[in-house]
Amino acid sequence: MNALLVARRDLGAYLGSMSAYVIIASLLLLNGLFFHAWALGAESARYSHEVLEDFFYLNWGFAVATAVLLTMRSFADEASQGTETLLRTSVVSDGAVVVGKWLAAMGMVGTFVALTAYMPGLIFVNGKVSLTHVAVGYSGIVMAGMVASAIGVFCSALFRNQIASGIVAGVIAVYMSVLAWMVAEIVAAPFSEIAAYTALFNQHFVPFMEGRFALSSVVYHLSLTAGFLLAAAHVLHSRRWE
Amino acid sequence: MIRVDNLTRYYGDFAALEGVSFELDEGEIVGLLGLNGAGKSTTLKILAGLLMPSLGAVSIDGIDLLADPDRVRARIGYLPEEPPLYRDMTVTAFLRHAGRIKGMSGSAVTARIPAVIQACDLVGREHQLIGTLSHGYKKRVGIAQAIIHQPKLIILDEPISGLDPAQIVEMRKVIRGLGDGAAVIISSHILSEISQTCDRILVVNDGQLVAQGTEAELVDRTGGANKLLITVRGEAAPFGEWLRGSELVTEASPREATAGQACFLVTMASDQREELLAQLVAKGFGLRLVEAPEDELEEIFLGLTHKEVAA
Image 1 (cartoon, chains in turn green, yellow):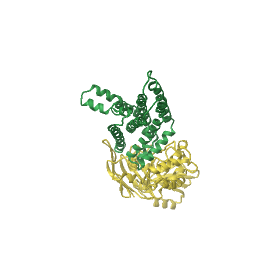
Image 2 (image 1 turned 90 degrees about the horizontal axis):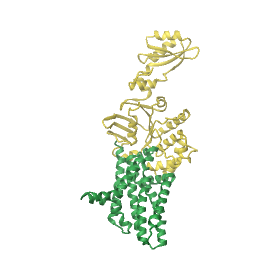
Image 3 (image 1 turned 30 degrees about the horizontal axis):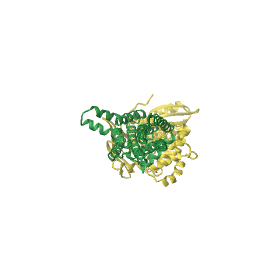
Image 4 (image 1 turned 90 degrees about the vertical axis):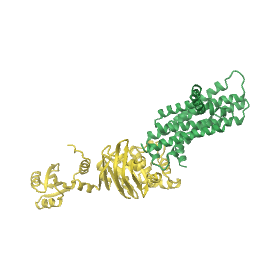
């Protein structure tokens, strides 16, 4: 319940700030351009499900970027306004503050994701699309957004400076998206297996992209989200003992 | 009742606070005095639940901060030097949010807001965006968020810093009204402010509580009661001569006075104010005014913190 109070306040701050609109609008524009050029721009005829996979492939990256860019200000804004004090002297636990900020970010990421729905709609109009594939793909996108938002909130709690937070969250997201897979290719077992398993995109999103619901990947996404949120709460709690 | 017992806080090896103990009663307004780095902010942050103590305990109505921090925080209102305000919210929306995160129900906050608006003299500003308010009004909103949930302990860190003289007078009125049902602790480096607003004073120096009591008690303790500013009718020379010849007086130095009057700052070896004044009247000097020196609290403070009085 307390987390919802924080979420409502943060959502209001997002909706009242120009930067959130600029971030979402810019990424939607880029997403649309890439979709048009890449997914729809193939010279040879393609099946609708292949175009849809390309859409999810692109949308995954843009959803992660949206989450990182939005969350980098989560605690930085509180620190700059001095309102961190208000939260930390309230009865809202550190964990609820973190969850509230994550929920607000997810509200914005969810809005971004929802606004991309016209793209599968275009495929639907011009071809034949399985609604199950769309639903499964979008659930993968939302889970990627959950993980990226949790990473962003954690980094924001850690650094309280939005530039540092954004950079580190970006590095973690890029590592988990792409670099982990590349690392898996060049190191020996068992490290290669570990690195490959942690690769968020290759290992855990591709099934969703292809319309296959992978329960183990759901667990992985949820575990990562919970892990980063827990770490963020610990960062806040440790500040009381600094 | 707020009880602070043997409060100690280390930052690494540095002891910012060492063995500080005091109690605050409901309705008391207490001033926390100290130089920069003396330990005032650390004390207030621990009381507010922002920092945890390395040793010692803080309890409000018998509830221990370490054992049950949430219940203690629900009983504390805190205004840091820079008010924690969401500039994009209106005063009412912000107070509603502040009340909710301090554990109040929606209906309780709605019922409480008018009283807080009144107490903090924010009438007419309820629907204004906080970012557009003057510094003085922002401070008042800061106090309003600190008292919205009717805390048992109100902590105000430098509440008048940055205010103009008119705002200071208004803020003083607001602060005086807070002591109803709560203990108030105010940190300030403006000694006259503490003197005018507080019932009791705590003096911290180098992380330790070096003195506590009412201003009068501190005056007595530091020998301040041995000083008087005396104004009589007539010329300065004979009055000064008589004072310097008196066995009760150890020092008498002239002060500026209006025409036809003489004013002296008189220092005695001990508190013999009554005897001195009786002798003065018996001697036929036209006594016009007897008062404590204005810089008394400053002298007491500097004496307690072992600082030299600037020449």
